[in-house]
Image 1 (spheres, one colour):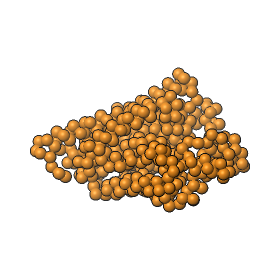
Image 2 (cartoon, helix red, strand yellow; image 1 turned 90 degrees about the vertical axis):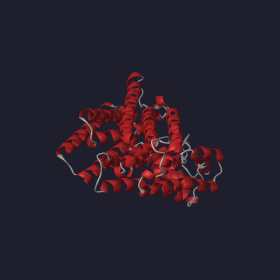
Image 3 (tube, one colour; image 1 turned 180 degrees about the horizontal axis):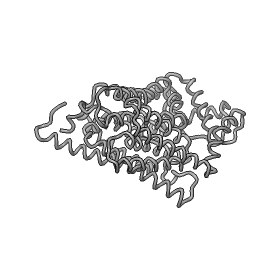
Image 4 (cartoon, helix red, strand yellow; image 1 turned 180 degrees about the vertical axis):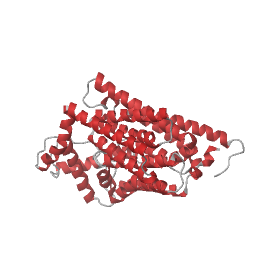
Length: 430
C-alpha cells in the first residue's frame, strides 16, 4: 500500500476508524425508524466511503477482487438491459438500487481501514437496532393496538420484519459463538429475543422463515467448523425451545397468526382453481407469472429495468394474466423473477453471483481455513446465515429493489471484513 508521510498515516487511520464506527453504529440504529433515515444515513456512508475507502482496498486479500468484479458485472447487466427499455423515468429510479454495489467497493476498503473498531461498531449498531425495532413494535402493538406493526415507520410490515430478521442473526451469532463477557453476551441474546418478537409482531411469514433458515445455516456452519461442545449445544437447544414456545404461544393466542398461516395452505389452491378474489399469495403468483412471461419474451437481457410495470399492464390488458384488481407494485415480489424479467438470464446470473455465490464462497473459505482469529469464525458463520436469510426472503419479496444502499449490503460488507484473517488487515491497526 502507498505510504503516507511519516507520522500522519496512523493518526489518519484512527480518525477514519472512529468515523466509520460512529456512522455505521448510527446507520444500523436509525435505519428501522423510517426509509428516509435509512436513505440519508446510507448516503452519508456511501459518500464518505467513496472518498477514503480506496486506501483500504490493498489491505484485503486478492480473492476479494472477485467480489468487486461480481458487483461491477451486476451493475453492467442493468445497463445492458436498457437496450430494451421504454420507461426511462422508472429505469432511473430502479438504477438507484444498482449503483450502491459500486459504492460498496470503496466502502469495504473503508471498513478494512476501520477494522480495529469494526466489531464494536457492528455490535453497537445491532443492539441499537434491536432497541429501535423492539420499542417500535411494542408501541405500535400495545399502545396503538395495530394488528401488524411496521406501518408507523413507513417501511411497512414486510420490510420492517426483514430488518428485524437481519438484526437478529448477528445478535444471536455473536451472543452464542463470539468471545465476549457474560454481560455483553446476555445483552446480545436479549436483543435477539426482542427482534424475534418484532418479527412476530409484523405478521410477516417470509421474514420469520428467512430468520429461521438463516439461524439454522449459521448454527450448522459454526458447528461444522468448530465441533459441538456441551455448553454451546445447551445454549442453542434452550434458544430453539424458547423460540418454538414463543411461536406456539403466538399461534395459540393470536387469531390473526393462525388465520395467516392457514391461508398459506388455502390461497394457492384457491388461485389454481381460478378464483381471482384478491389474496396475498394469489397476487404474488400473478406477479410471478407476469415476470416469467416477460422473461421468456426477453430471455437474454430482459425487458429493461424500468419496464416491469409496463409489461405487467400489457399482459393484463391482453388477458394473459388472472384479472386481479389493483395488483401493481412496480416490483414482482421475488428478486429472482424480478431480475430475470428486467435484466434477463445474464442479469439474473450476475445478481445471484454478486449477492449470494461469491460472498458465500468467501465465508466458506474463511471457515475452512486452518488459522483464524477470535472473531473470524463467528463473522463467517453469521455471513452465511445472512445470505440464507436474503435468499429465502427474496423468494417472496423483491427487497433488493426497494432501497438503495440496503441494510443487508452494509451488514454483508462488515461481515466480509470481519471474517477476513487478521494478517491481511493488520496494517490498519498501526
